[in-house]
Length: 206
Length: 169
Image (cartoon, rainbow over all chains, first blue to last red; front, side, top):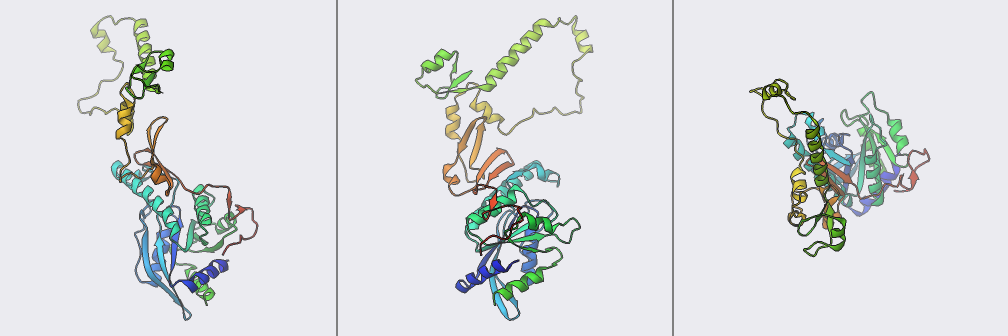
């Protein structure tokens, strides 16, 4: 399923020494968890803090010189962990997590600025991992609009259905919602299926 | 009721609006709050006129309309909207022009559209050229319109149609 995404990466790598890979998605779908998993696996250190509170990542985190070496091949990337993109940010959503009203409003302002930054960075990425929470309905306005933005910018996208370790995960639903995209299912939390992703990338680049 | 946008003067009649304000301006804004306040005031006066007068101050005290607050109870502040002050400034007979003139965007602002009051917006056109549209409803509540117009299609195919893959990479 990911052959087209990988073939594009191959073409890019022939021209560039490093690929800028953006990790996009709605809030709380596991973007930072996946970024940390990749970063720890390949660099040995995480990229950012993870929290059950939405919009924990409110600025773009970047990790350069992330090198994937497998079967004698090598791929160097710059990983960009993006703030979650939402069409509405409401401070009242943070109150239930114990934030004061002032702190919640400040967080909402920062989160909104993060959404804007994430969209701006679409012009700077060579390819994108679009993370979808497999336990949730994938057919949301935010998901559709994010993919539409990437489409408008000709950004190659790999749809990643995350949280497959959870009983409520339904990867078929994700796959059927976005049939036109290369697709892979993983658990960023447990690392399930990530090895396959790495392996496929390296094989396609050979 | 309408207010002149230049001097804030409340117009008394439609004829005056058609002819223009004595200050020279011909642009008026409808003051919804003033109309509502006026209607409420009239209603209260009608109720006061129709209700019987209390027989004695003592009797009135014995049957209060609302429970008396206890000494330990802190007085409750009136509910405030972040835009309440702005609305008061913009309406109520004060000149809205001065308010509009001093309301700008700062580096702290995330939004590029401000709601000054109902039906009146301040738009940061420069920021809109490269950014998503961000509308601030009230402090801490933002709506984001991403730059891509959702056409119901992604990669040229309807979503969820089950057809094969899109051409791309």
